[in-house]
Image (cartoon, rainbow, N blue to C red; front, side, top):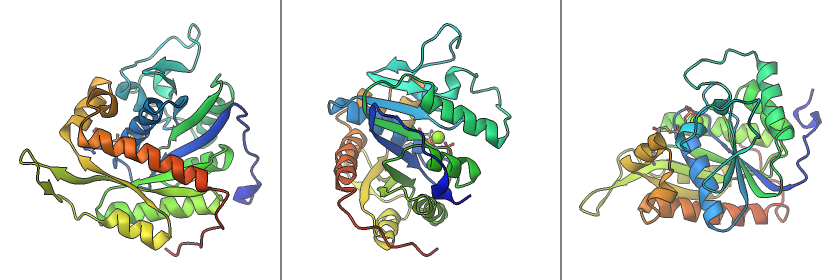
Length: 270
Ligand SMILES: Nc1ncnc2c1ncn2[C@@H]1O[C@H](COP(=O)(O)OP(=O)(O)OP(=O)(O)O)[C@@H](O)[C@H]1O
Ligand SMILES: [Mg+2]
């Protein structure tokens, strides 16, 4: 079936659905998704965060939540003002979920349709890493308004980010832009250090004709906050990383508003 022939799920109460994706694993998608969702909330929006990573859910730990009894719990859960859904609320993230593709698709579809998201300005979806069948099905069925691609500055990550861009183009989902994560480091001396070769995100964005939405510095507190269940944008709102996330939220919203006013983007050659 042609990708665009798959019927989309309708979410009438949700104004915008934003997917956070990357080709490569471990580049900081979930961290970006969680902090972006919170940043939007801090800017006065009604926000939901859906963890579409069925095999490796990380939103529960990042938000300081664990498993609950699904028979006694009404989903989505709420924390820090966000509405949250993750497989990690139902299955212990340490226990491997071994499901075949169609079951994963069903679980993700149910997250969208059977959960009472209510009225939301933004639903942020944290996608699993990669550009395989699971990601493709999701991008076809979820009513995505736009996608944000996360990359780190290294070449290996950029190559996979290109694949991510191409996947969204195939299913006609607008790419709002690129986020370069772990972009640089600000030392105790206040100096900026480019640990990895910085600037790959900007180059990729220029090449693909999409905006560079933000450059997020490296900060050990990001990982600390992820592990202790309170994202950095909330815990240390004055840190450079938090400021970068708040700026990202503003820029992403602007890009989203531009959609519909723009002609189709040229196809990317990879
Ligand atoms: N800007 C940053 N500075 C320091 N550490 C970071 C930063 N961004 C992410 N991290 C850390 O890097 C690790 C990977 O991040 P994360 O889990 O968000 O990546 P991911 O792309 O969602 O991974 P996966 O592909 O497994 O889903 C985490 O320990 C996180 O705390
Ligand atoms: Mg993740």
